[in-house]
Length: 118
Image (cartoon, rainbow, N blue to C red; front, side, top):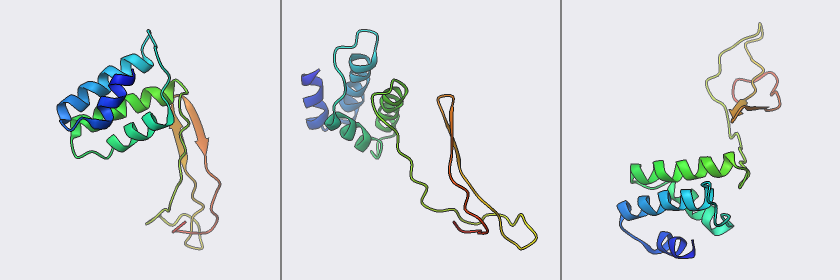
């Protein structure tokens, strides 16, 4: 596990990075779990989600999804703003909120009253 972790932090070849991510996924999240992801690993995999290499993004997303599903990490969502919302009441406003569904769970934000741009 530690060797794979060091390789993930140091390897520059995108194809090798993707292979390392797949190996880590089975190592950390598979049936034969050998290790639990630490904060450094979570941050590194998160940074790979912003990679320019699409295959690396997909591999990192797969690992991250498994980590969330298996409760290794908590997912925190911040809703920054809403734009171009339709008018839905007689005063020309609406009462928007956000519903997030993940792994069979549903979370609802608070309602922002009388606005089109929360």
